[in-house]
Image (cartoon, rainbow, N blue to C red; front, top):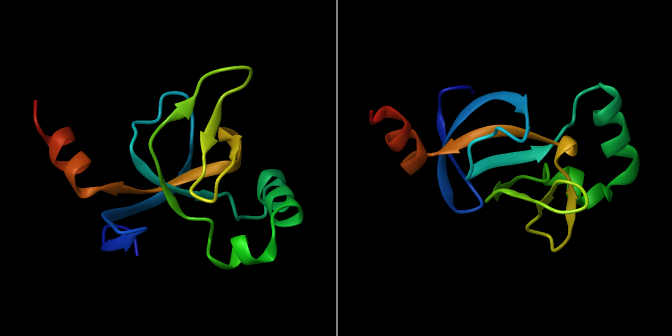
Length: 101
């Protein structure tokens, strides 16, 4: 539930309503593959292994890899264009940092 804390890949995070990853996203953050009924969500469901979708494809993203195209390194060993992902949580230390002025 949004606003609750939960552990994602061993990191304590506060859940947020899913928002698309963009080049301006603050990292690190908890992300997952887009899973709604949008075109990207439908494409992810078609292209990705069932086992990955069953685990929600959640992981802590450290940033976007600059290069030929902007990609996120996944915890399952490859990289995907950032447009495939949505932010679902912020790690607890990041929340504390954002509160500092």
